[in-house]
Each structure stands twice: as C-alpha cells, then as structure tokens.
Length: 442
Image 1 (spheres, rainbow, N blue to C red):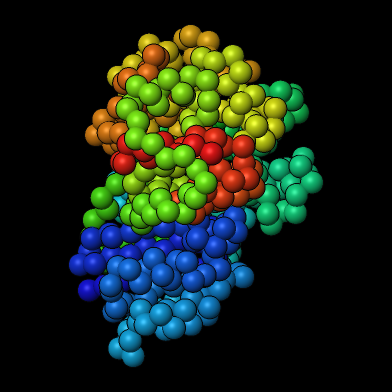
Image 2 (tube, rainbow, N blue to C red):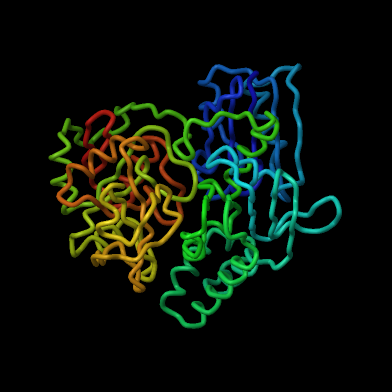
C-alpha cells in the first residue's frame, strides 16, 4: 500500500510510505522556498512523481490557514492519485500526532511530553498547550501557554508579528545570555517546563523542545529523549505512524529527504574539480565551505548533509561565516565534533547528534561558544554520517564550526539549484560534494 501524509499548514511536510516503510519525509518549504509555508509547488510534485507511485491513501492534517485543497488539486494534476484513492482529513488532536512522530523517530517511553506554542483547539473547546501522555492516553494537561508566552516575548523583542515569531524564538534564547531581563524570562520558562516534566522515562516533543537551554536541564534525567522532528515539521510523520497502527519503519530520525540528483551542468562558469579529503581540509582552514551530500536532514538545523563549515580555530571564523550568514552578534554558532572526542573538549556524557542540548566547554573555542561558556554540540559518529565523520577524522582538530547551509531568511538548501543560488548571491566561494569527491569553486 502506498500512502502519503501531508501536513498542510505552517511548518508543513510530506511523509511517504510503501508497505509500512518510510520512503521519504521532506519539509515543504525546502521546495517552495517560503520559510515555514506548506503551499504546494511544481517542484515538490515533480519529486514525488519520480517515485513512480500511485497513492492508495492520502492523509491530510491541518491547522487554521491550511492549504490542503491546493494539495489535492496538485495530486490529481500530476496523476499521483486515482478515483479509488482514499482521502482522509485530520483537523484536531495535534499533540497526539507530535506524540506518534516521536514514537517513530526516537522511540517510546513511559511518558511522552508535548509542549507546543499557541496550541490547537480541540473538539471540547479547550486548547492543547502542555500534554503528558502515557500509553497514548492523556494523563495530564495544563494551560500555562509556555510556548505562546515565548512567542509573544520574541515578537516584542524583535518587532515581529506574533503569528510569525515562532520562527525566531532562538534569538530570544540566545539574547538571554546577555540581558538580565531576558535571562529571568528564560529561567521562568525553564521552571515551568521542569514543573510539568516527569523526572525519568520521558520522550519530549513539540515546538518548545527546540529550547536547548531548557533541554539541558534534563541531561541527568534517566532515559530522557528528545524528538529531533519536534516542531510541526514532524506532524505528517506522526499522522502516518498513527494510521499504520504504530508500525511505521523509519530508516533514520533526520536524514529523510529525497535523494539528490547531481546535474553539475547547472554550474556554468564555475570551476569543478576532483579533490582529496586532505585538499578540502586545507581549504577549510581559511574558508567556509558548503557541504552537500545525500538525503537532506529534516528539522531546524544543518547536521552534515546541508551544512556550512569552517575551521573553528581560525580567529576570523565567525567573521568569514557571517559574510554569508549575516547572523546577529549575540547568536553563537555550533561545533560538530567526532563523537569519541567530544568529552575531551566538552563536559558531555552522552552523544548529542541533533544539537538539542548545550554543554560547558572544557577548552575555549570562541567561534562556537556562547558568552556563558556553553556550546550547542553536534556529535558525529561514523555510523550516522560516514562522510562527515571522515572529514572530521582528517581535519587538524576533531571539530568544525557547523551551521545550516542557507542564506539569512531562506530555507535550507535542498538541491543543487538551491546551492547554486546560494553561491551566486551569498558570498559562498567553495562547496564540496563528498559523494562525488568534487569541489565547486565560484
């Protein structure tokens, strides 16, 4: 059976399964290039078409302002559904779908906590804000508006419309290290989350689980997990998992996008050359390099498949990367480090493959360290990302500055056309394609 689940609202995504096995999970905005938008476009329909599937079932989830009507029209236009296709709509139980997503990315626990933003109106008239599940049943709900309060504070601080501010909450979190009033607000947020959170056997999801400072309060909790697709970008995966009675088989928690095509002919006027890993490492010491390989990672961060890398020991690293990223002065970059070397440089006791926690530095690395001496660390294992691991293994230190491969205000690079746009307009001179051992030079 071929099934496609589409979350047709902000932070939308599509999840496609064949015979209970996930084929692809992809964020819609990577194709329409409108941040957080779920509006369909020809580019994503053409990618789906290449899978050569006719869908037996279409599952739509939505929120206020959804666009599933356009999706349904597009599926018909591209002959991806037939008259026999079953189409189902799910407009409520948003937190349940967060829960079912977490079950298939990081696994179940006795307790599953969902803490979201503004919440979704339920049939009984209440709004989901903070929910504790056990055995798929709600055992506790509160209405503290933890996430919504953070969004409103962010809107106030950065003069953003409240309904758009959820995309910028990381700025508020970073600013809390510099301003006492914001630090107090962050601490109060953490206190509210801790009061709601069980102390062991917890799987945590929902948009507020992106707050890495709060997450780090739970590092010593027994059997604590965080869903890397905790935002609404994981909802379609949750809908699909629920429909399949929790039997969905997922091949990786984040590297789930479409397989890339390597048509290098689009880089006319660029220099393209075969390189060794040693040559790449030499360039990386003094220049940012776009790193493009394999299926795109889903979620909020570049994790080695769509990343912008730089030698974090270079005194000009932040300046050079910010010529491309244009990031605010108070927002630190992150280090990616070999998993087995992480404890030498950070106070870290367990792997952190998704940049969901911060850790105190043992050795100062200014380019990837906040003013409070912590870093949002990504640990890299050979099993999870062999090419990225190989790069770090051959570098003169076992870590690099790693940030997402995108321009400020743009979605992450999805394909080579996006990469070319970034190189054309974003001061990016070098990009490396490890699967092809090719360096592209502007």
